[in-house]
Image (cartoon, rainbow, N blue to C red; front, top):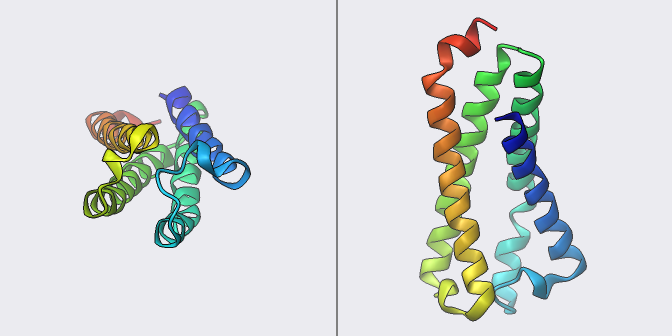
Length: 131
């Protein structure tokens, strides 16, 4: 699980590097409103990445705080999923070619990983708290 969490944090960082260095690689639109919407996400994505890295560290070092970071990260992921999907549905982003499909994939991975992390943490909460 620690590796999955770190992998997700690396993917978040890679997305933002691509957004800053070569935006067409990850952008599903080119309008000002779309760019402004995406530009509002780095802080929230940074919080999510921090939660994932902290949870990974706590799992590896057997710290009880792992449960907190897992729940915080899973919740942050679901919140970001909700914000992103609502915008995408309102603006038809998923139907905008290959990058629209990339956006759909990001949404699905965010949902799947968030639910997986929350389920994994909750079903192991007693063990995590006795670490």
